[in-house]
Structures are given as structure tokens and as C-alpha cells.
Image 1: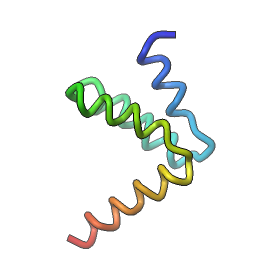
Image 2: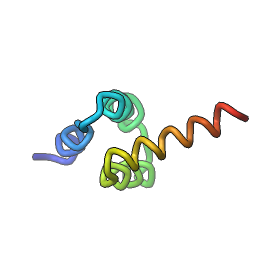
Image 3: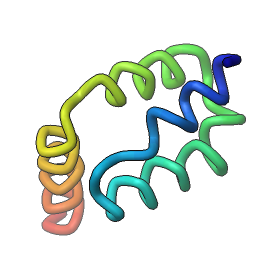
Length: 66
């Protein structure tokens, strides 16, 4: 399994919301991202579903309040 296929598999989570967010990023932003951003995305995928969702929601609520 190559690197991109592995990332696609790791984007398949137990929560539909995460699947949609992660797969959307992988399809649209990942191909044009720099190496540091790609490495950061790979690290995010190591988080448990609950941790990842909480992190994403906390970032959205901060951005929405600005």
C-alpha cells in the first residue's frame, strides 16, 4: 500500500463526520500542501476519533467567535 492509499485508509474513521472532513481535506488540500502540513496531517490521523473530533470542534468554535 503506497503512502496516499494508506492515508485514505486512515481517513476512514468510526464517525461519518470525521470521514467527510478528513477525506475532503485529503482530496482538496493535501495535494497542494507543503511537507510540514502533510506531516502534521499524518500526525493528526494517529489521534483517537474522540480526540480528533474535539480538536476540530474546538478550532471551529474559536474561529467562529473571532
